Image (cartoon, rainbow over all chains, first blue to last red; front, side, top):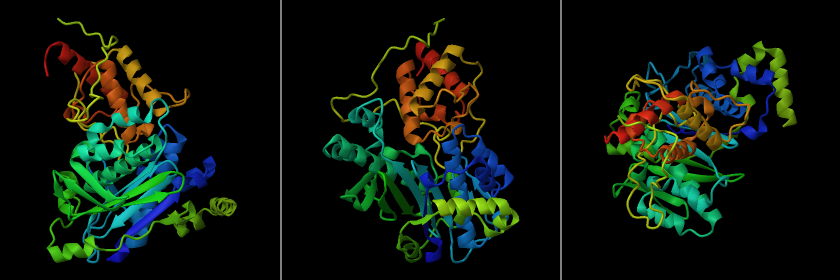
Length: 293
Length: 139
């Protein structure tokens, strides 16, 4: 089951494709996925979207061995992507994954049994308001305890950093269950010891069936991972899950799997070899750019 | 017949800045349709339909707010047809956009009504509907 646990990261600031290379990478994906990438107005968003999709396909391919052109990724009503599976792999009762990006990084996480959510944040200073003004916008998303901790953290910079850490964790949780912000993010309250031993409560009750991790990445980025019980999934997401009920022992096998470290991937690794072979000139270009990088 | 002016907002702070006790009543949570989580494009669902179209000034105001929040370059074209998902707004952007809209138009955007808003036009339509309802004394 450990093989179903993946954590990958791509630093997109290191990939600056010429239009030709971008199209080439785009063509790896099935036709219907491409329009959802090209519709973004900003090139930066298109790049992130492309990397995000490629990560999904590459991960599914590596973990489950499904060829790229047989991978079908659908979305729930709320928009959460999931793998359309005609069969369930015995080793992975609920293979599921989640992606996120912000700033320079795109991250993907997968789990074989528990739900997984991941969120990347890039801590940037607000441009048009002070830190207290900025965070005040989001005060209703924090519990009283969290808010008190937050505003008493220290300097503006420290407050901002803690704000982003809380936000990132909350997002990881709501994304794991497959909802948007509509879940009641203010109900989940995070507890931590200097951002380790992270746990959460909902309505005062500890979420014992959940694990949370927060990692610092370069250049003021953080990534949060949430792992938890499938019964927390939203209605629409639950329909995509094979097994929502587990006896305690079986569930703990999934809950207590190691949380592996994030592995950095580069674009070239996300493109299947067979694709490269068909398009010789593009492959050379890609190799060139990776050598230069 | 109350005449609705969407261009003369009364500024009314939503939160009490002095004492952080209760939750802010107005802003629940914005629709998932707006928030761009990677791989979560919004889906156009049919639950919410508006019968009348918003005034151009409202659309323009929405565009101005969105443009400012997302720091879009002048070359980036925004029209009433622009879908939020194309703009790459993340959850933080979305919250701030909704809050700015609430302040500008002096309305409360409830979660349910914003569930399926996907385009600039739909936002403008919703805003005018809420402004009208407020003027008519509905909740």
